[in-house]
Each structure stands twice: as C-alpha cells, then as structure tokens.
Length: 348
Image 1: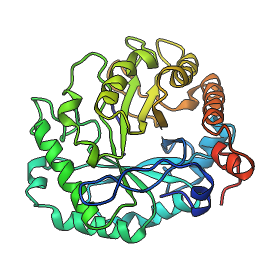
Image 2 (image 1 turned 90 degrees about the horizontal axis):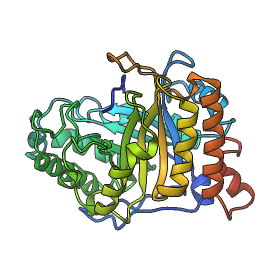
Image 3 (image 1 turned 90 degrees about the vertical axis):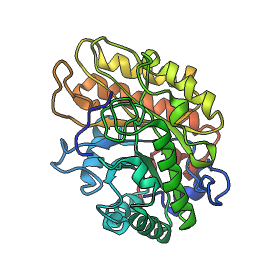
C-alpha cells in the first residue's frame, strides 16, 4: 500500500543518441510510437532539498543527484498533474518545458479523484479530456502518464476493491475511453504506463481484471514499498507481482513506478544493494525505476522516511547500484552516446 504527499521529455539530441524502445502502431486503440532510452531512471523528489519540489525548482534535482547518484543526471522525473478537468495540459506546459530543457522525460500521475469511473466512460468529461489531449499532441514531446495508478488497491477513490465505488470492469472501460480520446487527438507522443500496486500477500484485485489490454498500454509498471514491519526485501515484495505482470504483458517494458524503504527495523542500505542485485539477476524485464524520494506524514507504525538520503550508507548504496545498472544497459555504446546513457554528459 502506498502513502504519498502531494503528488517532458528528452531533448532531441538525447533521443538521437540512445538506443530506443518503442510501442506498436498509433492508430485508434493502439499504443504510442514514442521512443525512450534503454533504461529510464529518476525519482519523485520532495521539497526537503530546497523547500520546493521539481520541476518547479530544478535545484532540487541537482541536489538529489549530488547526494544520491554521484552527480549522474536522471533521465526521468516523476510528478503529478492531478485531474485533466481541473487544469488543461497548457497549465502544466511550463513545468514540462523545464524538465525537457534539462534532457529529462516527465512521468506524471494523472488521477480521476472521486469521480465514478463509469461517468468518465459515459463521456461526462470528454470535453476536458479532448482539450488536454489536443494540447499534449500540439506540444509533441514524449510524456509518460500513470493514469489512475494502484487501481488494484482500495486507498484511492478510483480503486477497485469491494469497498470502492468502482469495479474492475469500470476501470478497464474508463482507461480505454480516455486512451481512445488521446489517440483520436493524435497524441501519440503520450505513453501510457499501467501501474498496479504490488500484491505479495494476494489481498488486492486480480491484476488480470484491471489490465486494459496490450493495445492500450505502452509500459507495465509496479509500485511498492518496504514499510519495515515486517521487514521485506525487494525480491520478496515484488517477485509474485512481477511474474503476474509478465504473464499479462510479456512483451511490454516494465517500470518500477514508485519504490522506497524505511530505515526502521532493518538496514536500508542493504535493502538498496539487494534491490539492484535482484534487478540484474531476477527482474531483467524492468527497463526503468523511479524512487519515491519524499518524506510524508507518519502513519501509525509506518514512518514515511522514503528518501534515499536518510543515511550516508543508503545514498552510497544507491550511487553504486545505479552506476552498475546503467553500465549494464549502456554496454556497447561509445563516446557521447555512452555518456548520455550513463547520465554523465553535460546537461543541454
């Protein structure tokens, strides 16, 4: 289960240099043709560095990189755009341009708040969705959207557990409806990341029931945290859900959309080292990861101390781990292409 606070694009030169992953055809009901680098990585970065979250204050990204990555430049920034009927795309365009100008793709959360999903499918919000999609298409830069993430749980109003107002069928129908609006608008630069929560104890909605189908998903995705009680390593938390997603979509690249570990009740630095080792050995379908680098209000028994930099040892473990991971994915490249892939090239 995920507890969060509040909850772009690669520059042309970067796209030209990196080996690419792409979706299938872009006709209505098909996935996007937008292409991304071999491995995308970054974080949802809180306000602990500068008092303001990025992308609005890019100094927070620079501080995160200095603290946790050995100065390597992230390739993706995770943040939120709320609901598409509260603000249109152009409201966020300035923030998206900040990330794009830094050579970073935005991975944004888009939620539907308390709106019943069946009302979306009926077309109640089509005008706002069409505006958002048309403006995104006009912008034309790559953008990942995590639409109604963690839908297999019950903690968000768009959840699909029996205690929620929505069924799994409601979710699938709403996802497909929104996706069709974007493809009809020509927004093939938008990539769709389907992000259920990990379900190691089999307590949530069956992922198969909320999967929209291969023609409506570009990236699969998993969110999950080590809350520390009981302490659980990355493999224990993610393995069952990872294999379940592979059964549903074996040919889709996979993103770890939100992840983190507490410092309490265990060794966070060891957890991070084990996580990177597990990704290399047992989770080789994963093509991206986003750490949730945000402090949050404490839940009884579960302090929200997710940021990597809660200890020097944790920061050091992340620095080493991401370096090894990038070296694996960037193998075979040379010159500036390799520097771009490793995140060691100068920013644009």
